[in-house]
Image 1 (cartoon, rainbow over the protein chains, first blue to last red):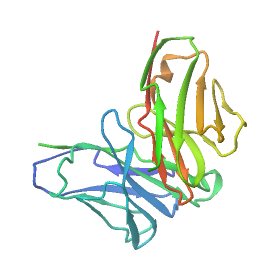
Image 2: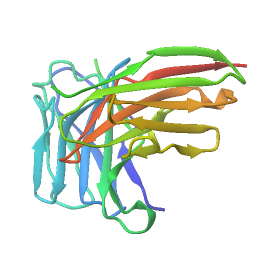
Image 3: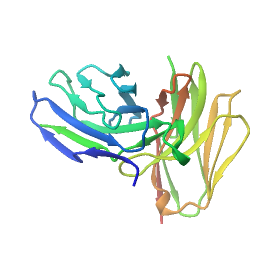
Image 4: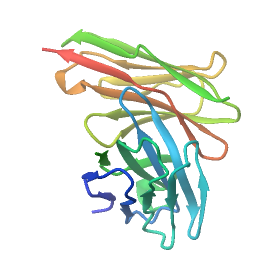
Length: 118
Length: 110
């Protein structure tokens, strides 16, 4: 089945540790996105990538880093520089993917990773 | 600064009621407006609206866009407990970036 997967579902880390969140898609989408969602707030864009080996900062990129070495994968690293990393992280993708998913307008989301920093 | 504002922030109704959720926006270079439903995890796509006055329907849900007054509404008729969710509105700009509203939390009581 085509879709977006994120792992792990839940992640606990001690303060000061870097953590990497995985995002993989097999939809053949060109663009991928990372969002952060806090309680009672909308999604805020961290980073996005429209093509392999290229990515752009979103609205809240400080304390985060990404890579896009493969079209299918867009991992997010939460570094120790992120002051308040506890949140729900959502990965999304969009772009030409064939069939009814052929659209740059609609973003498809993974199930999310809930990160808790202790 | 681009912004999307949803109202109300939360809403509690009884099963069978009809609800209207609002989304207003101020976005430079508007491309489209999207509605998503978020239950516990990933938002799922409901509608994409690009033209004013054309209603999109899917079962008991419908939505319309007014590009002159810069808002959209999402209607849900004959609500069911399964409609309980956070409904998110997002506006896409000319760079295909989404600006998100904070969402409306809808609770349907049996």
